[in-house]
Length: 79
Length: 222
Image (cartoon, rainbow over all chains, first blue to last red; front, side, top):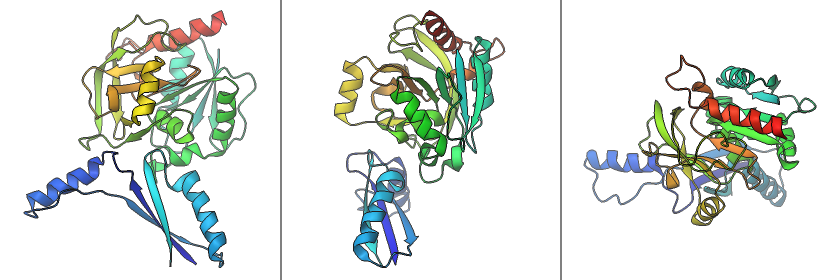
């Protein structure tokens, strides 16, 4: 089973990199982009085959290491 | 005073920190990140600057989960002293020993220069030898020093007099111009500026020396 973890800065946490991308887009003439938020995607190849067990395990991985829940939120999709 | 300086793969200020501790008479042991215990009788743990684990994932995140950090957390929970500088500060926020987080500098640039700081409090073992609201010059060298914390945490830091240093001219976008903060028991200091790079006449400034002198004086008195 493959898990895809999406990690984003929480709303309200300034994202300097996203802001830089927004400015670059405007410079290139792409108008109408009001905001850009940059996050990351982490894919995990899991031996686990049972969905519920995998969800629990990946949640623990996110809380302990993959995301910093002080500033980030995450969501996991299984593919 | 007995100090342990933790060495992670990618630490690059570990030796400078050890030299700064030793210059004030401390006995220093270097401790590798894979060790699981600190040497007996350690008064203070130093988490040095650098790029532990290449800053992969998030600055300090992997170091915060290394074997030795469990012992560092136990040491801190028992009331032991911890000094985290630059990457060491990032590691302290990642372990949860200090609140908040350090984001990419607001202008996205790595900044390496000596800057002016203002003392936030002299009420700690790290800052007792400075004078209140004193201005000091200490170098910074970081890409991710933009301190962020929610309003509640900021109010608590300010209300409890836990902001150790602020930037005179905020270089990185930090909330409240925060350059360094103390833990609730005032025994853990995390700061982005490098006091260990300002301890010698041949350095641009020797203003960091008082931080180590404060520690020695307080430990001797204890």
